[in-house]
Image 1 (cartoon, helix red, strand yellow):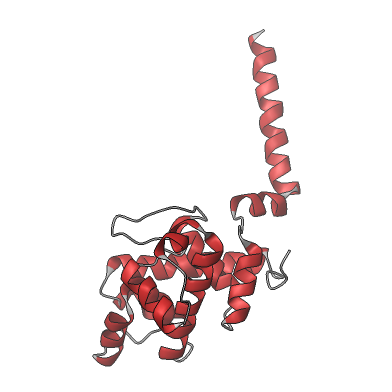
Image 2: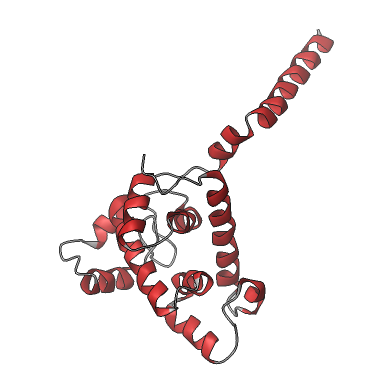
Length: 191
């Protein structure tokens, strides 16, 4: 009886391992899903952003969970601070959007977050690494680091970023960005 149980467990384990190798694309998509794909594509297109970057930021910020509020008070799937969200609503002409909508509706959070990423992209001349850093640490901090030579805005020198959280954030976003570009090369197409 014991030998039979071991054989069954061994067969199941081997079947699982074979499934991983045979269906690795399926497994990769399962491990690295992209939710809210249509909203990501539309908002990225609205602000001339790469949807892979928007998806990577959402993955790092909330792992696609709505209604999440960070310890610091950031809201929505893209985790914006309420003051920043209100500034975006005003500057972007979003008028009737509330922070409650940003917090609870992925489509609204993604649109507002994409607008902000575009603003950062313009401020930092399209340097993806400084944009990511500014999204996490704030544009004032990143501007200061660049101005005083603390960091040159390159991925190779990310270890010079003075905030450990921001260093790790940049690395995680780039990891998911590259993973999504590999797994979802056609993310530009809304489903």
